[in-house]
Image 1 (cartoon, rainbow, N blue to C red):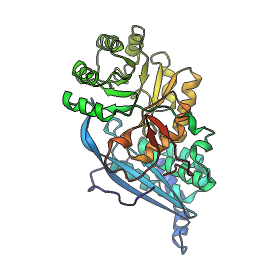
Image 2 (image 1 turned 30 degrees about the vertical axis):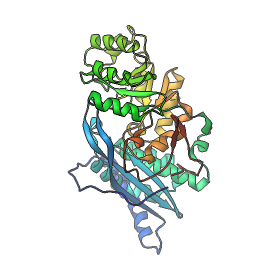
Image 3 (image 1 turned 60 degrees about the horizontal axis):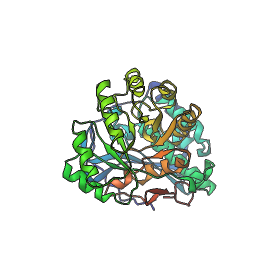
Length: 378
């Protein structure tokens, strides 16, 4: 169920991010948009907003600590049907919400002047014409696919040929915090059968001790590039194996692929690439350094690219995981529609906020339950 009650923060400084070729592409499409403006009722409309999502708890990882996150939302309307999209830009990838909004505004002519059923062609031009700003691309991709699903009258998991009964269990993430808050967060996550623990800030043992004082559930660990030394990573991972941990995400910085390959040869727990795996071309070079990849729509540029990444990873015999940034139910539900394809899911970004403007995918005892309504089913 959608709501128009978005909270829009004050404007912040931004930067121009689109390439000259994309500006020329948008200019070429502009006459068609101008023609629409002369009609009594526009053929299509695009609404772009920055939405401030308030966290239930301060969210801390090795990279940042915050009480809110700004995401960019898109409402694409054509033929009386509105498709919704969202992208969650983060500083790790040199992106912010204001820049994402600017990029989407620059893409307005492209998005409005083309037949939305040619969404793959539209997104190909968007991907090729803009440098960076993958969260903005994801927002447009999700909105177009939501529109297409609604136009066809089918949920997106059906469009991709998937069975909603095949969704995996999602983890619930526990951010870095004081031992007291970690224990409280762990208790609040009682309904989730598997937890994801953020490590990598020098308090790893203390954090795991706090979690284990409350629960003996299986754990998955995300170091978020926090361990900078390969020997330290080996020590940590071998210790985590004794703590009931199933696998470790991104133990070393993304660029340290050779060092990660060395670590992998000395540990037993599977290693999952996160920051090292952003787009399809990244996956083949990671094949012998990691056991699997964590795919996020905001990193890849949307559902179409994420689907492609899942297929590439599977073809290489790697484990697949769908993750998310802190975002509303728009982005999380979009990823959830692809989740029957993957081995693992970490789709809890909407559960970490207190002002979600949408309702979409639900979680029942940890398992993702997809909406049956057309499109995303929001």
